[in-house]
Image 1 (cartoon, helix red, strand yellow):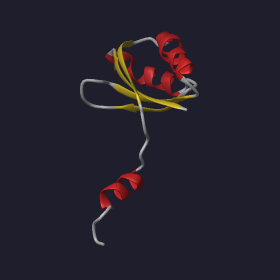
Image 2 (spheres, rainbow, N blue to C red):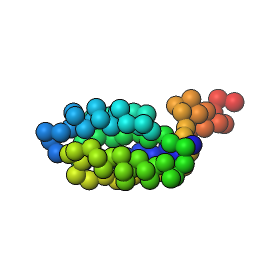
Image 3 (tube, rainbow, N blue to C red):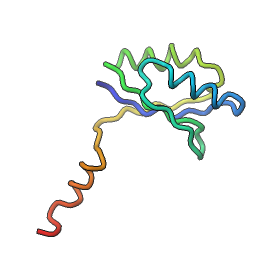
Length: 93
């Protein structure tokens, strides 16, 4: 499984519509409206890199209003529980 974080800049009048279309797109697990230099952050979870390439270059390209994107591949997923365990090593023993 490939997980990617996709940062998106979207024209102001299309932010909500683009977010809804992204959320309905196969391979997208979550879409967040955020503050800062990006308008939306999408989390993609797909089978392999070919599926990610299709998602980003074909399916997302059909969504009107996206003006720029930056895709980052996730190497490893850590839950809050995992992180707390890592930082707790050696403490309180």
